[in-house]
Length: 118
Image 1: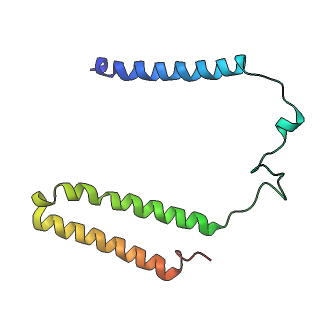
Image 2: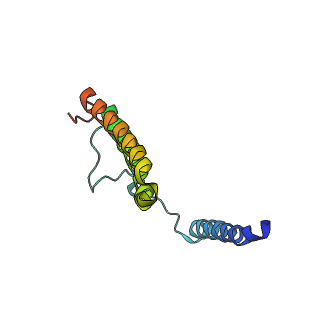
Image 3: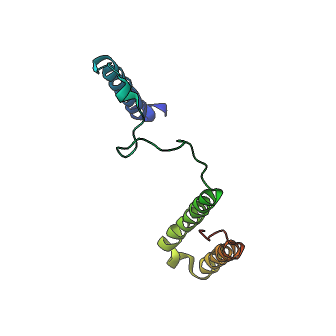
């Protein structure tokens, strides 16, 4: 039984070897002369103004998480679409309940102002 996994193991070993080889070769063959100009921060061809670390508003992360949550939940519509004829009425009812739960969650987030970008 484990013999069927041998090609996958060989693939992982080859990938690990190539990764280690490329990193080692680039460090051995690449130039090492670093100057102050090369070590200076680079941002759009201009010297940076102000601190490089800025606080990002929490609203950005909230919108990103909401997008991921709804994106993943919508993926569940695809398997249903493939077999909706075999599921008939009970499948339509289950998907309707699922969609209703998604809709209630979306309306709740909308009313709470989670989707407003200020």
